[in-house]
Length: 270
Image 1 (cartoon, rainbow, N blue to C red):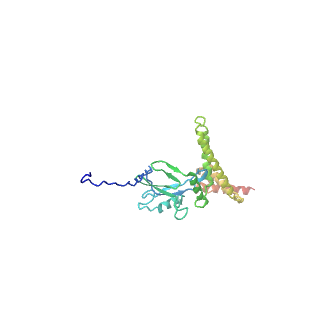
Image 2 (cartoon, rainbow, N blue to C red):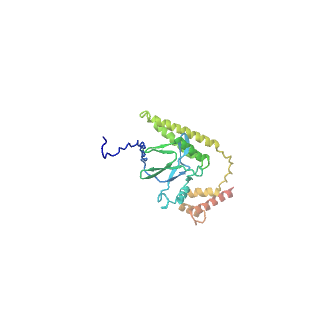
Image 3 (tube, helix red, strand yellow):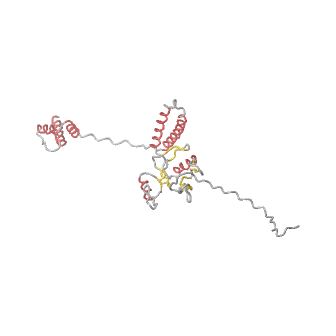
């Protein structure tokens, strides 16, 4: 017997599967940093990725810092750097629409980096594409954007490395782990010596010419100089007075007068 006033039962339907929860990636645990441009200097080089490359400087474009005005205009600041020998590497040096910069969102802002650096979510680690960067840095020289390393800069690097290797070699017996550093520096030394040999091979020596012969010194001037250097003025005045010469003028003038008199006397005797 059916129950009175019993509501109809709902059969329902199978619900759609729940969507996978969206996992929010943590931001890199790095401090914010301002945009920058890269500058090269003829005295700054290093060995990286098995190559001699320019050691570039990051010039911050933060307003109010390093000559950049509060509105962010940096052209005067860059001009000051260029006056000190630095060369600007344009951000789009690899062509229109390119940039050697990358920007990441980090806690409390954004962080600018080069495209050869790698940041990781939730980490303070910064990786590096060393060989790729070394190839790009070398291309700056190959494309004529910056001049090659000068000989004196390479020679200075070689000298410092040789000194460092010698110092480490004196300590390696007591601290064997230093051998790793010695091996790395010796590898860098080979790169530098090869770079130096290549540059010196490309240099064209000047032929030069024999300089003109120096004129014979004036005997009067030689004698005057000798008198002036070996006698005080009082002695020169006394000597000039004995010879019946004028004692007026500076010590150098009196010495010149005496020298002329002596050489004239010698000519007369001959």
